[in-house]
Length: 113
Image (cartoon, rainbow, N blue to C red; front, side, top):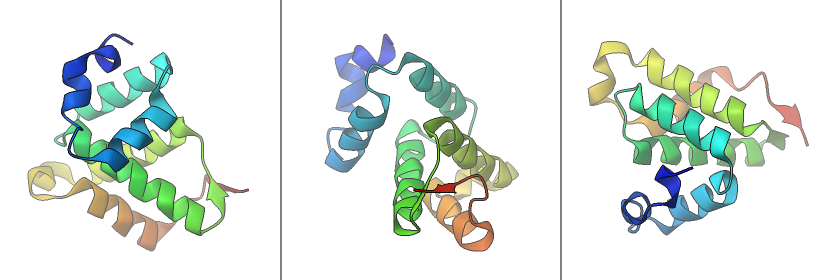
């Protein structure tokens, strides 16, 4: 995808090597996933950086619990957490919202490895 191939896109994550590594591992050469992620982030009150951090929180939780979920469903889960913030989204931290949702509700779509 054009946006993931530009230097300016990657520069915004240069201070976060973990975020960069996650993006490269899960989104490099995945045009459809890239578009879904960018569309969801653009349609929310949260930055792309917060979205990727929230995806990392979800991935770590799944790993600890011996579960897996498709990347599309990962994005969907984060999207639900973002929507749940409602009008107070600008006061919320998306990775923390995802963590709270996981602790309260789990992730029923996830399957064992």
